[in-house]
Amino acid sequence: ALEIHEPDPTVRERLAANFTNWTAAIEGCLKAAGSRVPPSTDRRALAEFVLTTMEGAVMLARSYRDIAYFDRAILQLKDHFNRLLRPARKPARRGSQPSKKGKSNA
Image (cartoon, rainbow, N blue to C red; front, side):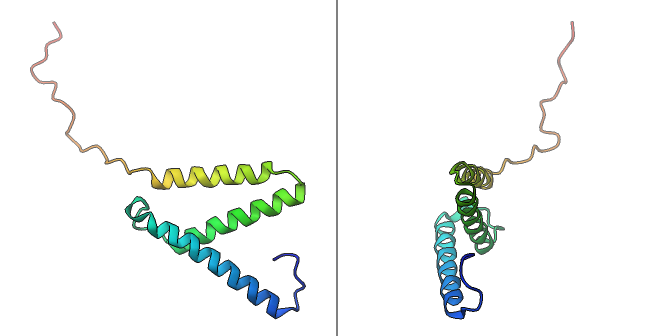
């Protein structure tokens, strides 16, 4: 997309349609994950984030001629998803600690 000639609206429109379709495909995967994705997650925005990360990673890897840039970006993306999909821990309830009554220090 960065290599296109700016005045060519037809090419830009096709590229935009391609990105829209990729984003929709990623969003579909996020919807298929169902309740594993927290309900407050904006799946469309997350799909755009995934696409942006991957496209940026490709650009860096090509620019530096080093696949390690892509690999590191994908590892960070995977870490992000692992944290997002991790089941939320229930907060400890106050007063739920065992009572110390009846114990002697003798």
